Image 1 (cartoon, rainbow, N blue to C red):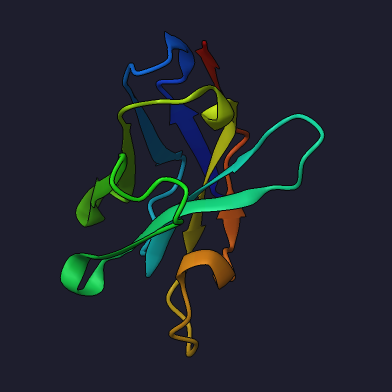
Image 2: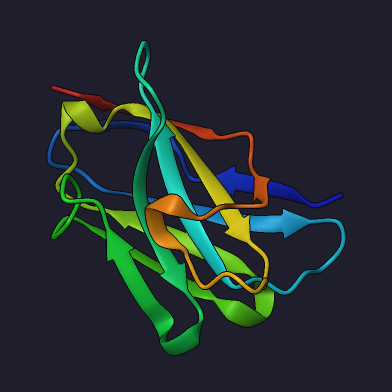
Length: 126
């Protein structure tokens, strides 16, 4: 079983920055893509960003485009989310997810993703 572990969440003022990290614990794995999602209280989980290791392609939700940057290390299956110019509406639990190589080339918001982390809380105060 693969366990993804997120870190880097916390409390920050509006306009500030945070950097989230996600890496698998336990056994190593080979992934096709990794992504970040978030869920605010009382709302459904929403897509934030993803990276596909082939060509280091990235894909952002419109709500974070220009403010967030996803990056990672394919060899370590580690993904980062640099969050700048944070807004109170960015407050949520942030989850990372990994998609294993399959015959499907889909990724980004549709995934589908095979493993998920437990999340890290990000709170942006106004």
